[in-house]
Structures are given as structure tokens and as C-alpha cells.
Image (tube, rainbow over all chains, first blue to last red; front, top):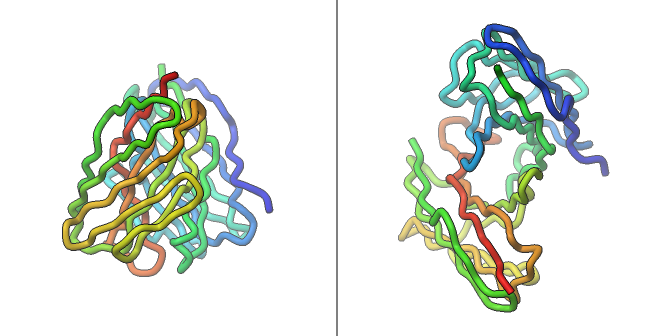
Length: 114
Length: 113
């Protein structure tokens, strides 16, 4: 059973640039969620994808967008980067209807905006 | 909306027992989960309570009281490796099917010798 892998692990971008983060879900999982975690805080829900469609979104502006592919891998895109976007971005996969088994998280991408 | 309250920090002695409390406010309720996160690591799933009562998994137990909107995580026989942040999380009612998790701010547990 493979876990959740994210790339890149670290990234430095300049304010105003765009970034794409990638995630490969755990085998057999059909749902992917993205979270932003600031230092010392809990993960904040960005959005969730199921069957390649967004089916839930947190309090994040439209410049945060995503995609889920037929193989259940996923991307998080952030446009017009701001300094406050500096955080750890976590991808989590799960199986719809099996929430009791929990989410499997990747180790995250540490994004620094300068 | 949802809100979760848990203590920000807890310190306990190796070999002891520690309880981390969580109170929540949600428009609906689909279960309370607990996750552990070591510094620089990914959150890992510990437990899930959908019904009232105690769930035990090895040294870790989790309790839920839906009438009190309250739960706790109990860690027994503490080990140094248990030093980590612990998050309670509830599922959001906003969407049907696989509803997303909303996390608390986390409790940083320090285990001392």
C-alpha cells in the first residue's frame, strides 16, 4: 500500500508569482483534500475533490484552485502569491464513505513567499 | 460554522497518563477524529469516534460525549516519542458524502523524563 506523496518538498517563490503543488493519493483512495498549515496552527481546509470535481471549499480566495486527475492525483495552484501564503501545504487522501479510517496525509510542501 | 477548542500546551512525565480535551461547536456532527503530528512531519490518524463512549487502541484511547459536544484523547504509559502536537477534528456538514475535516489549533504535548 503506497502512501501519499507530495512534490516538491520545499519551494521558494516571489510575491506575485504562481505555484503548482502536486500530490499522489494513496492507492485505492478516491478523494483528495488540500490543507494549509501555518506555523503553530492546525491545518486549514482549502478544498476537496471527489471524482475530479471540487465538492467542498474552505474560506480561501479564488486564486487558490485545484485539479484532480483520473488516477486520483491532484494539483494545487496558487496565483498572485502573497507573503501570507507562506505555509506548509498538506494533501490528504481518503476513501468516500470510510471516514472512520481517517485521512492519509502527505508530508507536505513547505512554501516560502519572499 | 465549526469551532474546536483544545488546550494549547500540555506537559507530562514519562510513564504517566495524560488527557487532552476537545470541545466543539458544529452545525451538524459526523464524528470526532484525533491526529498526531511530529515536528516537520505529516499528521497521522489516531482514532475516530462517531458514537458516545470510549475507543481503545493500544496505549491511546479516545472518548466522545455527543450531548456535551466533548471528547478527549487519553495517552497512557507516556513515552518520549509521544511528544508531538495532537489535533482534534470534526467533519463539516456543508457537503454530502465525504465531508471534509475541520481541525482544532492543536495541543502540543511535551513528555519529560
